[in-house]
Image (cartoon, rainbow, N blue to C red; front, side, top):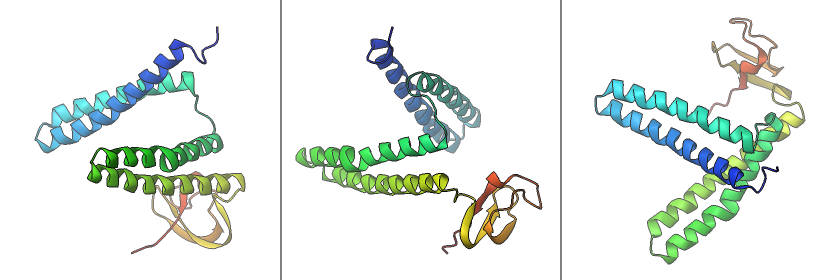
Amino acid sequence: MELKGSQTEKNLWAAFAGESQAHTKYLYYASQAKKDGYVQISDIFNETAVNEKAHAKIWFKLVAGIGDTKANLAAAAAGENEEWTSMYPEFARVAREEGFDKIARLFDAVGKIEQRHDTRYRILLENVEEGRVFKRDEKIIWQCLNCGYVCESPQAPMKCPVCEHPQSFFQQVVQNY
């Protein structure tokens, strides 16, 4: 039997959505419990959030799968694109029609953020495809995300000379302060 188009597929997507929402909601609840002075309750909300995230991953893997980084970047860009070009503009239009101008402005503002996410994912995808994640044509500043070691080079070190973490722990330093 084919999963695609079945009620079971719809149920898997609903289960994924529900578990994903529960994960996020419990993180919010944990933060509030901690602010209210209930550290143990906060810890329980956080623990449950981790469980809900694991449940969501089970359902997501069954219906969509988790691809390699290239595929995931492409999928993420497509999702963000849908949000800023279609979903949020439509939500804002409806909110305005119904007299919820503040909510419409929020939908518009979040749509602009989603546009930035779309652009960022597309640039990262291009960097992966063209081998530019850890190598550039010009010298740039690289920083080890583990120990903070910094160097200036066209390419991130294969291994950090201080903590010996692999190249995957390096990122380009962007100073804006």
